[in-house]
Image (cartoon, rainbow, N blue to C red; front, side):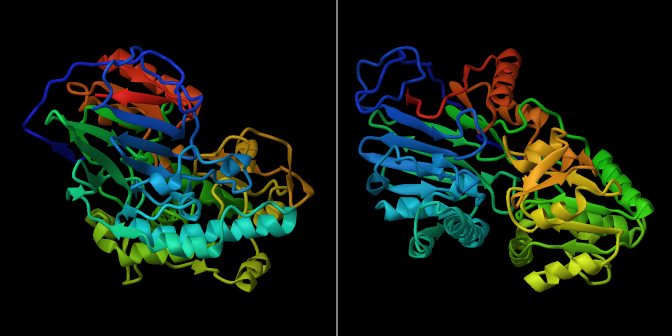
Length: 496
C-alpha cells in the first residue's frame, strides 16, 4: 500500500478566484474567475509547460520579488521547434529551481536557463543529480547529431551543461529546506523513478498564514518492482498540480503483465524470432531486467540470449547499483547466485558500437532491449530496420509513446515506416503492455488525490494529453467535489 504522510493539524480556507483577463505583462490569460482588488500578498502560479501535453513541464511560482521554478523540461525530440521558443521569463530573475526528477521533459532545459543567466541553486535528490549528469550529456549529443545532419541550431553549449551541473544542491526526502525567509519546500517519494520527488512548496505570507502548493511531478506505478510506494500526502496542500499521463487508462496488474511478458518471450522462442523492446534508459530498463531475471531464474521461460543494447541505460543501471538504499527490500528477492539485481544467465550488456553490431550475428531467438523508448533515436532503430519486416518477430511497447513519435505510429498499426530515410515494411506483430509504465494510472491517481480532498482549494491537472487530462479532471470533480482545472501552456493564476 502507498505510504501515507499526514499532519494532525488542519487549517481552514476560503476559495478565492480571479476573473479571466489578459496580463499587462504578456498575452497569457489567467484561469481564475474573479479579479483580486489587493494582490500585494498574492502568489502567482504560471504554467509554462505540460499544459494538455506530456512534455516540457515548467511551473513558475512568484511571491513578492522571488521567483521559483519547479521543473524546467525540454521536449524529448531535441529538434522540436518548441524547444527554441523564447523563454517566457527572465532566467536571471529566477532565485532557485526545484527538480522533481531527472527525465529531460522535466529537467532538460536547465543548461539553456544557465546560458540565459540563471545562477541560483538547483535542488534535487542525489540520484536525480547523477541521472541529470547522464541525461543532459545524452541530450546534448543528440542535439549535436541533429546539427551535423540537419544543421539544427544548438540550444546551448557543452560548457553550459557542465556549469549548470555545478549549481546542484543535493537534498534528501522528508526534510524541510529553506530557500529564503518566505519560501521552503519538502521532498517526498514519488515512486516514479529512482530519486523522483513530490514537492510540497511552503510560502509564508505577510498575514502570518502559510500557503502550501503540492507538485506531484510524475507519480509512480504502485506495481513498481524496485521502488517504495508513492507517498500519499494527507491534509497538507492548499493547491495541487497533478500529472495525468494515464488519466484515462488503467494498467494491467502485476501478475497479468508478467504473464504477458512470459507469453511473448515464449512465443519468439517457439517461432525463432526476435523480441524488440524499446526502453527508456531510466526505470523501464531496470524494471524489465528484474522481471526477466525472475522469469529465467525460476524457469518460467527457457534460457534465451538477452541484450541490453543502450550505453545510456547501462550507465543508468550503474547509478541504481550505487543507490541501493533507495530500492525497496522486496526487490532483492529476485537476486540469485550473487549475480545482483541486473545480471542473470543469458544477459549481455553491449556498450560499444562493435558489441552492438555483433548482436546481428547471433541467430534468433533473442531479446533486444534498446533505446529510445519511443523509437525516436538510438540503437533500437537499427534493430527495427532489420526485424520489423520479419513476421516471426515482435515489437513490444512498454513505455508511453509520445504523440507523433515513430513508436506511436507503430502502435497505431501503420504498415510501413521511414527509418534512416528508408521505407521499412512492418510485418512483425506489435504488442503493448501498459503495466510496466512508471506512471500511475487513473485509479492510482485518484487514490492519491483523494486524501487531499478536505483541504484542497483547487486542483490543476497537468502533464497529460488533453483527453487524458480532461477525463481525470472530470473524475475528480464527480468523485471528490474538488474545483479542478486543466490549464493551457501560458496560463497563470493568483493563489491565496
